[in-house]
Image 1 (cartoon, helix red, strand yellow):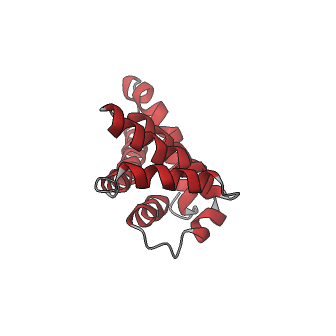
Image 2 (cartoon, rainbow, N blue to C red; image 1 turned 60 degrees about the vertical axis):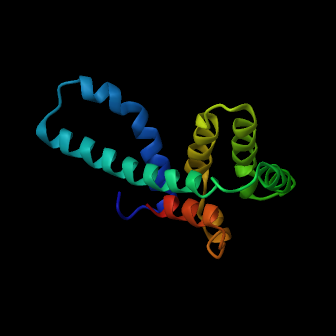
Amino acid sequence: MDESPAYAKGKLARELREVLVSLEKAELSPANLGLLEGVRALSDRVDKHLDKVFASLDNVPVRELVATSQALERRKDSSRDFAGIFRNVADARDGGWSTSLARFHLGDAVSRANEGFVEQISEAEAPFWAHVRDALRA
């Protein structure tokens, strides 16, 4: 797994996380328990980066989140997948509710990112994109 591209690791971690609860209830050999712990560690590394992605939006005004969402919606590349995240965070702030939907969309967008997207954001300086890049490389 360490030789896989970074975006594939993130995608695999997300898919395997869904199975963790079932596996923890099953009887596993010590070797399989070690594998399970490795998957959990990878998943935790990605989650730490996703937490940083959201923290980078804490001081961004709602108006700017909405404008970013609208700009991304007009794009024809993979960054368009991230438009809903900015919109969801803005809506959550306006409504006073959780950003769990935005977090779900972020995890989904990161898991679907490909090598081209990684290259596309490789030079991005905004903290949001830097943390997304780190999550893809985790």
